Structure formats: structure tokens, C-alpha cells
Image 1: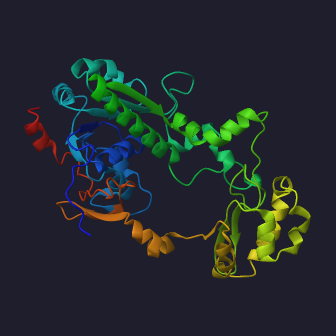
Image 2: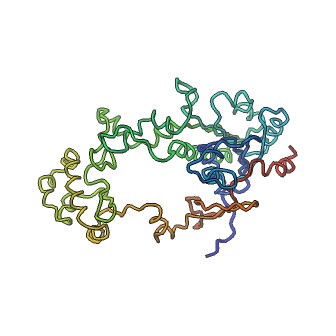
Image 3: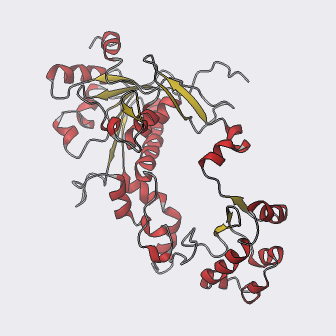
Length: 387
């Protein structure tokens, strides 16, 4: 079905993205996908450092895949922040902007004279967003605001893996992406408030604040049950606070995930007589979690994933085959969501990537522009805004 032409909700807004790496650019990516015009402010000599942040040995058009993934659909204006004329041009551009995003190290933005107090004098209606590692006060302020280090300080690593593994980090830059998502929410709230008051706002978040919020369920439990530490399962742990059978089990031809399920019902369906001592006391599902999961694992291993799904799914047991990426991409469920797109650039670069995880008025917005070359739009932007 052809998508009808529609005005996206942020169409007409100008976002200046002075951030780099992941957190700020992830935030501006969401805004761009919803229609905002994002002008990426980059150094002329090298640009955003994530252009050289390689997740693999794949390089496309001179830049890393991660840069392409997170900066598609944006424009690039090359600005030398040590050049007074360029700084003056940037200040003039700020006067026309709706949003500014920055994630400089603490103190840098103040030295540039582009902190919120300074730019508010230029543009009182500007929604100004700052992302840091650990806020702007306290002993961690000067520490590197890097994803793995933020995870290490947040406690989140003690929720992953089995109990004998020590701290296990997430295999994704969750601190950066969660901080970017929180920043995007704050910016949208600031824009709503501006529509009411005609005044801008300073939105602030950090990697640490985002990771603490990410753990709000389990931290609330910890704070209100005597501050007991979470206890991960010794075997096939999937959640430190949930009882058996919650976990992932190896079948004869793959892996099967089983979520919250009444143990007696599961025991009957799987013909698991060995669960008899545990089935009638719900407390045992937690205190004897590892023993129960090992008994389930032994049984699951005797049959294929499809055989187990044929037994469990009709009985409304919450379970699923564990897919790898090739299986996910080939699945009808994934293809129905239409979450992939190809973005292109005038120099012939073509990138397969993801799309906005939102549907607006029933449609997923399309933006087929690839990430820009450094300063690709400098001449046009300078002419448009008379910089």
C-alpha cells in the first residue's frame, strides 16, 4: 500500500545536534524520523568521532556502519569551534533553531560560551538538551561518560547472567540509547511547554539517570524488601527476581523460552513427574528455582522446539522459539512490521538499516536519506541562514 503524503508531527522544527557518539545522535535520530530537520554540527577535520567507531571491519562510504545507522536523514554543517567567525555563525544559526542537543564533557560547553544561559539570551524559545555521564555535580562528574563504565557503576551488570558469572554487561550500548530516549522525551515535553508559555527549557539527563530509571521495577523491590540483594539463578538465569520456570532451555534442535507459567500446569503438559515435590507450594518455585529449572531443562532437551510449541502454545503457556538474526529477518512476524529500509546518498552509498519504531496515524514515516558526509550541507545552510 502506498503511504499517503502527510505532514509529520515535527515537520518545520530545526534541531541543531552538537553531540557525537551515540546518546545525543540517537535522540536527534528519533526527532528526525518524526519530521524534524536535524543539522549536525561537526568538526571540519574528522567530524563526529563515531564515524571511526567500528563495530566490525565494515566501512561504507568512508564511515563506520554505526555512524550510518544513527545519523541517517540528517544534514551536516562543518563548524570549527575554535574559529571566532564559525562560532559567530553558529550563534546566528542558534537564533533560528527550535532545539539544541549537546553532550560535551563537563565544562567544555561553558568554555565555548554556548551553555544554556548564554544561548537563552540569543533564543529564549530554544529547547536546550544536555546529556552527561553522571550529571553536573558530585564526584563522578569528571569521569568518562562512556556506556560500559556507566553500566559498571549503575548495578545493572548484577542482573545479567548466571549467579557464578560475576557482573555481566549488556551486549548493547544501553546507557547511551536509554539516555537518548529520555532526552527525546524531555525535548518533546519542552516543545509542548513552549507552545503554552512561548519560553524554551533546559532539559538535562545522563547515562546514570537513564540506567537507574531502567531498573525502576527491581530497584523499587530492593528498596522495600529490606534491601536484599538480587539473587540470580545458578542455571539458565533470565531474571534475578522471577521464579522457575522463567528461562531459556535447549531443545533437541534449538532453544525455547518459557516465561511466567504456573508450575503445576507446566508439569502436567510436559508429563514431568519429577516436579511433583515442588508443584503445590509457590514459594518453592523461587527457593528451589535452580533445581526446578534443571528438571525442566532435562525434559525440554528430549524433543524439538516445534514439538514443544505444539504442546504448550494451545494450552496458553507463554513460550517462544529463540530466534537468531537470520531467523528473525526471515520470519513473517518481523516482515509484517516493515521495520527495515534502504537509505541512499548522492555519492552512491546505499545502506540497509532500521526504521522509526512508531506508526503515526497508522503509517510508519519514511526518510530515505543516508547519513551525510562531513559538511555536505555547509554551503547550502550558510546561504539559507546568511551565516
